Length: 259
Length: 284
Ligand SMILES: Nc1ncnc2c1ncn2[C@@H]1O[C@H](COP(=O)(O)OP(=O)(O)OP(=O)(O)O)[C@@H](O)[C@H]1O
Ligand SMILES: [Mg+2]
Image (cartoon, each protein chain N blue to C red):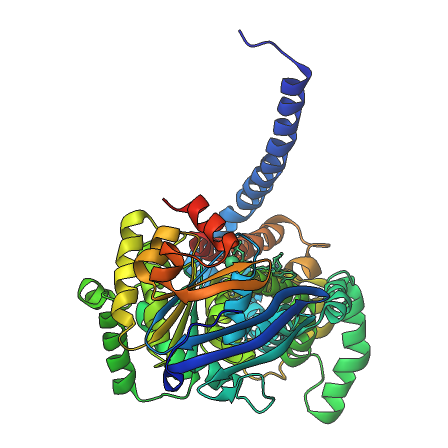
């Protein structure tokens, strides 16, 4: 198994020998990878190879699947997230997820942003308003929407909804953002905008994203992982994986989908 | 020219049947209004609905006590059933396991299938004496009626709210959980607000059912012609007024009962229109 070599102190997520089962189906097979702080990691691979499954183990959204089971460990800042003592609500505050289909709540823009902080006990109205402004600024929606904070979020356009979902995460001050094909429902221009946003967000957050789009992986990520049938075949710097993949299967996949 | 085929004939027949149900509604409406409006015009609409006295033999027709009675009982029924129905629907839609849902949901729906005379009978034999002995009054009361009606409208409100909750996309729950919400927080803060129009519509339809109920109400409400000032007062509703007197009424008395029907009709139509407006707005 190839782990990207890097400075140990900078590793925010360390995945070792991770197996995941849907019932008796082994969807992840001994996955090992180190994720470095303030980088963007792209997971690529054919449909059904386990990218979403892997991503969902990071914030334990994978727990929600009935009959599922996990083996191995994921250290988040040195602590095993599968430890029974882990506070899942806190874990999900620190490691947030953006979904493939934008899923703002049927609430106002402001209430969408305030949702997370409220869940985590923030009651101070001024702090909440400040979070609305700063999170919307961070995703580039503030200037455009500041006069319409009462508008229902479900009435926004798709890419604005996706930005709002990112803003909603940022409002709980996470450290890692998980994004499962965040641009797959967006048009090319909106996609470029979200990529731009991801590069911007990298300064403060660590991002793990899933994509089917090789160009996108090449453009936006620092590290890439290629998965096949539950295995992480190759994981290294994006520049090297795209220019000279070590594994033949990676080469086949990338050259089939790229160039 | 279009060829006449079996398909088009079947289409026409179905259309006719569909239209005939609208036709029935139309005829009923016309009939009720034609019979009821003369008395309303003679008395004056305002005098009719605000009049305190109902003396058919002296041709004095005022239905305020009955309007008050209908609304008092409806409000009481809502106070009883809305909290229950909300808890049931939230539990069934969000927390119950498959087995639980398969048992509890049909059980609640079965409540709707019990004939209202049975509810009335249980009310008279159990509830009325209980209220008389332990709470006060003579037992026939707004209170007793509200309790029984509350149970009767429970299935309506529960199952419509349940449908509204289930119609909320899974992605809302996931989104909330992924932000670190507990399941209850996800339901309370994301799912229920998204279903709120459906839930409000459910309550309004429940109100319509409560106002329209007759048999159980006649048996338990006491049917006195007074504006109820306490939950222990007996009342008469618009529906029971019609049912109680229709058997022997004639002439303008009979017309006045139709006029009572007109008022009832308007109230129930208004509630239904309101509910479907709210549902449509939610769908948009
Ligand atoms: N809830 C589930 N129950 C059982 N099997 C599942 C479940 N979810 C996913 N799987 C299976 O696990 C495997 C990995 O699925 P996963 O969704 O992680 O793939 P993916 O790489 O994200 O695919 P895609 O690119 O299509 O999103 C697939 O074979 C899928 O059929
Ligand atoms: Mg996927």
